[in-house]
Length: 88
Image (cartoon, rainbow, N blue to C red; front, side, top):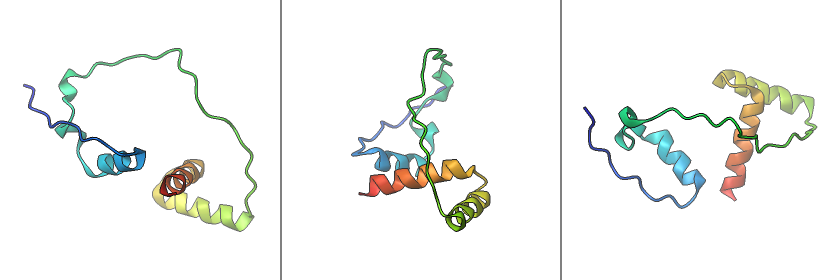
């Protein structure tokens, strides 16, 4: 039995959309019963490796914060950088 879903709002930017999905249940907007699995075998990552030198004390503080959130510290750094870039 599928239920009626709400229409998706228009978002001004990724930060607004990110906040929306953090605070709303997707099942109100997407009928997951109709979802289909897809395979995208030819996708290539759109990332680039960089070297970043940090003071040891800062890196240790970041690792402690990541451990508290149970996420890899590299992911936490990327999240924080993205949030800071979106804030400007």
